[in-house]
Image (tube, rainbow, N blue to C red; front, side, top):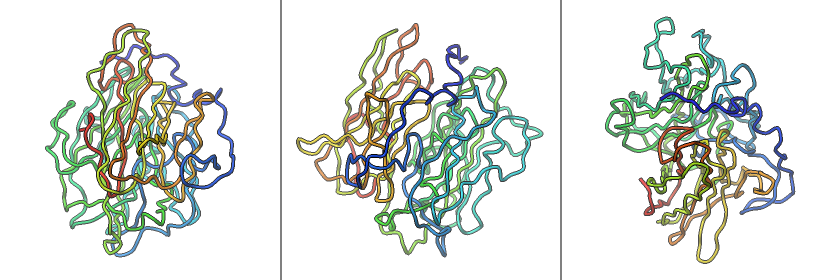
Length: 414
């Protein structure tokens, strides 16, 4: 599918996305809801994977301190959709943000995103991409002005039952999303065949959480994985340049000390309605959609997945007659992800000023609660848009999150 709508390439690459936006201003306050507090977790920054952890036989490097923001990496990626580089400052006691560790020269943009795997016994790396940069398999090349979502398979590198939490995501320029599932039917290419249990989702190159720092209330949280598990990676790549690009990702999974794991985290994925149609030039609110919370627990992080025609993604926790806004993202090309814990302070959202943000502190969930979400969409195309993977000519309104102790079912979930 050739991409023909190439308006504001620099904007898509992040070069003009914030030039006219007001900066969130510190306003004092602490945790526990929509407090106006110092902006530690800025829009589009943070981790797509919940909480951090360490290694079997001893945790990863010391985890203490506070979370930090992550300004986008500058450089030569202008004109490539979503450079996906988040050069995070290292929180006190945290793991430094790794980049450019592999000394490769592929001839394509993004070699600097390659990172080394964890030490043996402390984790494993999932790599989707060429094994030989002098003889690159064509499946990893995306032609100029093209877009594709494909499934790639691998086997997890752990040789025994493990739990993990801390994940490091690195993606070459042009990557729109990666979705890693375990234990499903192996993908056969195209858009089919990725089932199983989600264990990692990312739309940015980032560490999750920054510095591998785990919040005190999440010290016992882990995600289980059986030895040599079948893995499937759904990789969506968009090339709006006039040259081919290379499709490649690296994900490091760091093991937790099993003696510390007392709670399991699971990923939540809800699509909303997949039968909508928005006419040319039309503005439409998709939703609100909802799901029903089962079990008492908490949400670790939240991300609203959408495409180029989206102008707003909002989500609420509904408890009795109270509807609490916990997420509002306004920039699809620099997707906001918020973490909810006692170490992270999120911006206070202000729709009128186009400031993204949400809840600060632990976001608790109780039986009887509902999660609601909606998307504001304006179709900038000459034809109707529907639910599809196409970034510019299709749209989505998908809720991604990680929960501990709770599930959310019903609605339009998968």
